Amino acid sequence: MIRLPAVLRPNRVEITGTLVLAVAALVIGGGVAASSVIGPLLAGFPARCLGAETFDPAACEAFRPRIETYQNALSNVAPAAAGMTVALPIIGAVVLGLALLARELEQQTTLFAWSLAPSRTRWLLGRLAPELVLVAAICLVAGVLTDAIKFLGNPIDPWRSFDGIGMRGPAVAGIGVLAMGVTVFVGSLLGRQLPALLLALALTLAASLLVSAVSDTWLDQESMVGPTEQLDPGARQLAGLLQTADGEVIGWEEAYTRYGSVIYEGDPAQLGLTQVVKFVPGDRYPFAVLRLTGMLALVGLLGMALSLLVVQRRRPWA
Amino acid sequence: MVDRAAKIDSMIRTDGLTKRYRRRVALREISLEIPAGGVTALVGPNGAGKSTLLKLCVGFERPTAGRLEVNGIDPVRHRSRAVASIGFVPQTPALYRDLTIADHVDLAGAIRPRFDAAHARSRLAALGLPADARIGTLSGGEQAQVCLAIALGTRAPLLLLDEPLANLDPLARRDFLRIAREAARAGDTTIVLSSHVISEIEDTADRLLVLGEGRVLFEDTVVHSIDGHRVVDVETGLDGAALVGRFPGRGEDLHWLVRRAGTEVGRAATLEEVVLGYLAASRTASLAGVATGSA
Image (cartoon, rainbow over all chains, first blue to last red):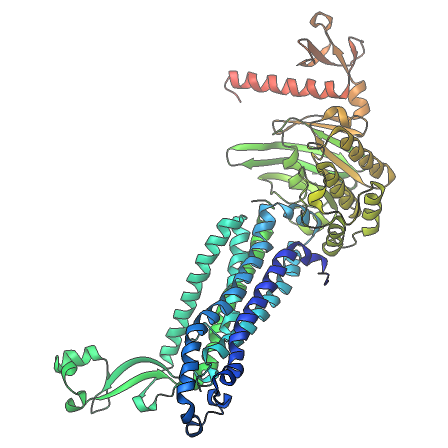
């Protein structure tokens, strides 16, 4: 049996619980992801028909019914599996975040720790840092698995598609860090587990949505406008627009103002308008997802930094 | 202000120290000195300000006004240094129920620089407490002993014991006090022991500090406290002696605590009677203040 360092032993139950959740996520996510190998064998079609790099339309055409059967079965299972693969490690992050301060303060074990530790900052960091690394690592693995699940049976490179951005890949690690940081901070303020849990969940959701909105605004500024044919499969389509003969790009509402209801009734081309799309190409995904992950993690780290300030000033009881 | 030499002799020094919790005043401009060495008993009723004073010393609370020095260090401005010179035992053992005694010693060693784990372990072994016992399976007395052993393992020059006897059975109290007494007499540790169980600490304490309603009512050595007072059991026996206060006896009777000043009246006082006399005097003064609207 592995013996934890002394500073981590007070959170032994939570660390074990988080590892159990991680294993569950690994089994669920890994199991579904592995179906890309096992599934074709069982369904009787070549596994290369599912690969982004290996997909060969000509060779795979003959297996289309079998591939579709497999993909239908997968589509029933994959969303739930991906959801659980993401959710379980994040639950672990919240559990660890609660144990770090809210539980200590509620059970007044901070009296023991803070009367011994000359530096409360060092006391908290000594436990927070390794648990943060654990959460980030587990969530990162979960993110990789959800990448695999999301694009099972879909010949698109997960790193060149905006589909499901924020709920897969490295962003899952960002959410994990955010959830942990928010929970630690709320716990440091409230010093009670249940209220801290409820508020932390609400704040984590709100912060995630806010960061996501900021990310979307950023993406909007980086978007480009082009004909529909220019859209790659992984592109993020932001809006359908119209381009006038003199090159001006306008929205449908503006077009309605200018041309009236005919714009919806007939072909815009008859009015000299070309349908275009505002989009972010799929090859921008790595940059966008890393930026999103960074923002999520930054909010989490900010929560942790604030909790370090709070423990400096607060009493060691709830 | 006090000179530097005097500072070194005082383990705890306060000057006009006040602590207020919203409307309630826990400590009212108290100025005191607890000298280095020995065991100082901090006694008084519940709400007298004993725990507040100790929590201020260990940096768990901040003073509303006044100055406080612990081992010459201001715990507000230099909490890390102040905590490093203190071992603290809270009233309710604040231990991790799921961890073993050994885990706690290891944890203390991990978060407290220069923690003497061997010393703590030897104290625990002497009490027959198995290192692999989970805290949740120990009695309150055993948990208090674990707290004390770990506090002793800090080798801090000052041990603050915040009403550690409150939840202990009589036998556990004796054990606890014996170890505290041995520690104080063995070396360079100053112990401040807050309690309202006066009879138990008479044999342990060297000094007495009585707090009541946030004020210092009396302080002296235990020997002087007892020698300097007499108890009169009949009011007519006061014979002009300097009255401190009137307090109830164990039955229906009343007793009068007087200062011993030349003339011998009454009988020798016990430490408990000295404390009761001063607490009763404080209460009488407080009630009189309320009655005249000058509280």
